[in-house]
Length: 233
Image (cartoon, rainbow, N blue to C red; front, side, top):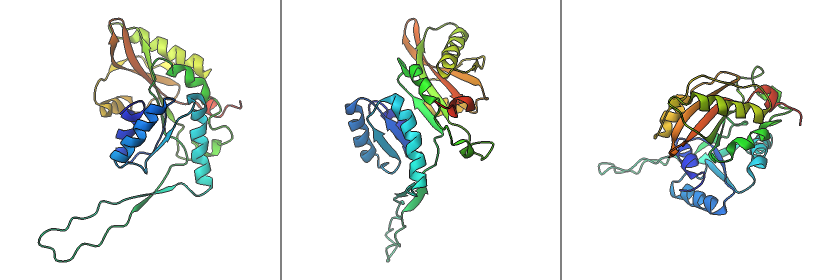
């Protein structure tokens, strides 16, 4: 796996629809091969385009699919095996038709060297589509999980404050650090549990791993504020 593969494939295996983008053609080629190998073609769509443009493109693509009635995919069902005691082959189970959501739930930005600089692209993401989200529906605005590098300290609170400040600056709205950096390494499922629900206007930062003696990778998670998502740009 390369590029976005380590994030896209595990999610797709759990039945999550993934729109994956990487500017490196080799990474996308590897992802497409891995998608077939892991039999998750219905769940992954791979793109090779500029990340700033892709943020709006994927949101608009989902809306367009829904409007056109093309937001359903057919997923092969697991077929029952015929046991030795059976004389008649079981009836085949038809494919399952699954609806692709109309809006995005999570953005995962895994290029730590530059990912924070992509945050201004979220302005106006759903401008003119306020009716699709709370309080008009039960759907919340998307979560963003942005990986980044910073220094490291004993508790990484200083780094959490600094990262949250950059998030605020890039979004153009006030965002506050939640107050504590949790160390969650290894299993991505544990990272998901560590994120959980983040309060509106807050940034949750967790410590991913060491990358150098004075450098660590972090992931900042927050829900896109309404004034950002619905901004007229």
